[in-house]
Amino acid sequence: MRTSTVVFLFALFGCALSEWNPLSDIHPITYNLTLDVNLPLVGEDNGNEVTMCDAEVDITAEATAPTRRIFLHAENLDIESTCFHSNGVYTFLNAVHHKDSNLLEIKTPYLLRTGEKFRIAFKHRYPLGLEQKGLYRATFSNFGEIHHYALVQLVPNYARRFVPCFDDEQFPATWNLKVTVPDVYDSFFNTAAISKTRENGIMTSIFESSKPLPPSHLNIIVGDYKASHCKEEQKSEV
Ligand SMILES: *[C@@H]1O[C@H](CO)[C@@H](O)[C@H](O)[C@H]1NC(C)=O
Image 1: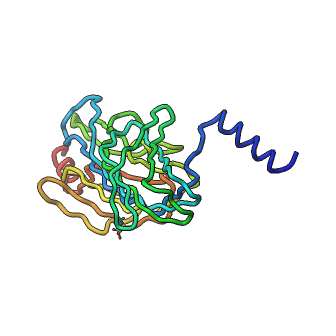
Image 2: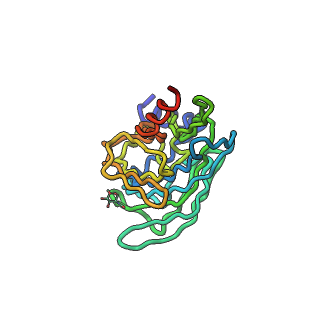
Image 3: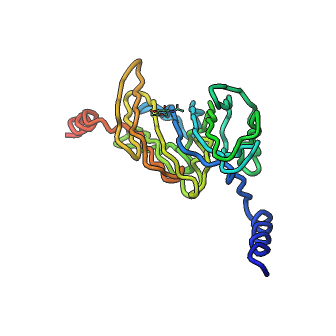
């Protein structure tokens, strides 16, 4: 058999047997992600409640083939708005959520040319719960006091549970992350923080740009890591 025939058959069976990978016409360059991680306060017991949290992402991407459709992964997300931005023009579009395949499909206002750069931005909500997939809440009791952390389990492809993304090792991109948390908490990322500000009970952390990383390589941690809190604990135990 000729190589092209083998490749064709492989592609055909690949499509039939496993999840079709329709992402290949677009590749992401940068994600600017803002996450609100609304953890319950220290001492607050919310059982196994799932909290819906606000998020926004502005993705800069490039078409690697002419296309009128953009596919990204998204799972269990509420997409509130989708905005396509190119050549200084913003267009609000409808993203169709194929829940069976966890794909978001967006029809672009015109045919994207090979090499054309554009932005696609989403406002969405993601669930923060105890299930250890995506960004999740870890809760434990320390001397009778309840503590909460937000941690990630993203391998092989659970980043799509908190951000619409090209959730595949083949698509590394630069990540610029901003995280807001109740101000008893601090947050950490793959990169160092550029700034941390506290205002109106909210702590905002902005992090340095990452090296190109696929979504599954992100690391986000939120917890009550305040040194003063640890000291108080020690004092009260003595
Ligand atoms: C993304 O964030 C970077 C770093 O803050 C900024 O320089 C860039 O302009 C932002 N891009 C978009 C599309 O908002």
